[in-house]
Length: 236
Image (cartoon, rainbow, N blue to C red; front, side, top):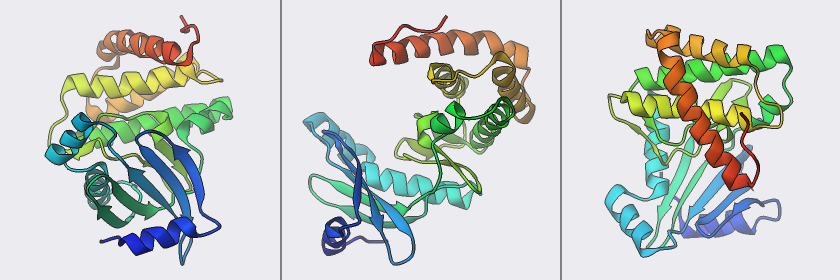
């Protein structure tokens, strides 16, 4: 699935192309396709260290494409890769656009029943990913889309199929999801949070009470980091 420079130029010059995000690292665009829309991610490693990392581990675009293909082959919802372009100082990946709000946005406007259903859904997805051996270093609500077909994991460059997910990373994923749920404008209640943990443990064959203490401890640390990044006090 090769993406040519000419195709990239045509996509970006389309008057209906929309820049979603721009940073020192690169940019993300919503671009029109012959059928529907696509998302074009352009990664430009800004430092020598990040360029060395791309040389050793593969570019972000290549890693995201490999992860998407592996997830889809394993039966998970993931954006369909449509084209990859790797150049000396940048890499680009075109994927099918996934319609829907992020999990963060969906949680903020959800009713109590909807929040509980979303908490269970993301917990069950996490358990399925872990049981299938997918290591997700950046599993968080802003990287999950609530589509009509279910939760879709996006931003896949830090996802890889390893065959085994260590306990430390598993708990890191769960604590990150929990912390983000508490940092939102409408924090999840205790019932939804514990319901999600029970759903995860049921699939992963774990005891919820044994997981609760380490999860809450890690979640508080993550919540403090999120508060510091936003310049806001952490929730108790």
